[in-house]
Length: 147
Ligand code: ADP
Ligand code: MG
Image 1 (cartoon, protein in one colour):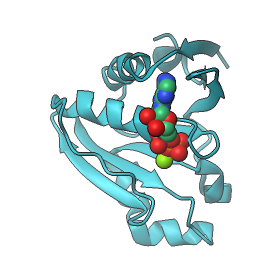
Image 2 (cartoon, protein in one colour):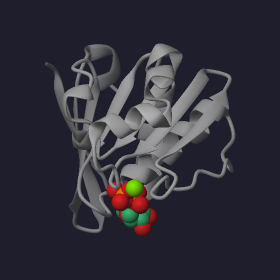
Image 3 (cartoon, protein in one colour):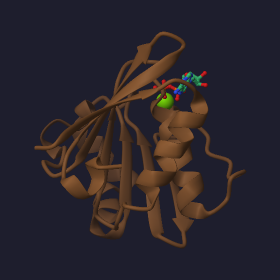
Image 4 (cartoon, protein in one colour):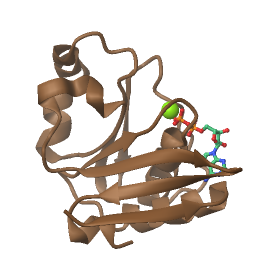
């Protein structure tokens, strides 16, 4: 599986990467946003969603409490999950998981909470803190990794 490691020295770098990814994501794609608290998962999701919506000011709250937010964009429906508070993987079915997978793009923070429901075909994006910025390791299909 192709792997690509990239330094994101500031939020502007994360925004550029998000815009590049948004242009490549298609319905049924899954982006698994890995990394601890504060690693920059929501920031990257926000950048992807703003670019997909074509709205730089789109309000993208962290779905920490709602667990999911859905965005209708010119590129289709984008579902942003934050599963930190999920107790059991099956709870995700109550959040619209199957509808999201049927024809949406899925961005998911804390994807490990999905257990066996985690799709095998996914773009794995692992964020970590590096100095004042972040590092991201992308792992997945060529189409998505070569940004
Ligand atoms: P997470 O969702 O992983 O908990 P957030 O996206 O909420 O993390 O980001 C946590 C903090 O990191 C925010 O204050 C955000 O501004 C900052 N941040 C995100 N990406 C970068 C980056 N590339 N460089 C520097 N700071 C960043
Ligand atoms: Mg977050």
